Image (cartoon, rainbow, N blue to C red; front, side, top):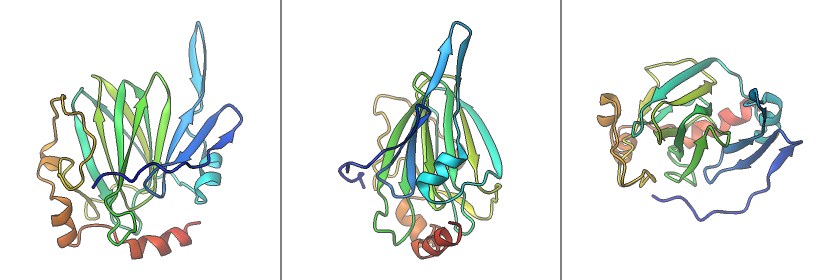
Length: 215
């Protein structure tokens, strides 16, 4: 299912440091960052807990930090965790470039299967935040693409799953002219329909009270 037509949304700005806009998938945000550079290099704040909490209305507690380096064409995801506790993520590309995709996998959500995509490019620093229960995937657009993601809960293999990123029902906007490489685990992931039929997806009814409890 393709994403909804874009709806204008108000931006939240904090000086010249950061600008945040909500994406098409409720509970996810693009964070545009400002860096300062000179002949020595550059400096920038790539994560601000106070700003993110102010905009999202919920605190983001970091429990684990992950890092991956991918060759061009490597596609990781679509990954998600069951709620509670789920796993909110804050994703930043420090080198190279990726196409970062958020998918609403919350069964029963009014925007179920809606997705949005954001270019994360180290030349124009940007980050993506997604709430618990949402699906996440990214495609490396350059060799050596380096991605760091802060997550709100430690890895729990019993509650973390995936859906196939090339599922036609999701219709995610991967580049047609790129040779895509998947891990064995992602290549064997079920379709969205199969995951829903098996009861593997997060529940919208479980997510809503969880969000309220963690505000």
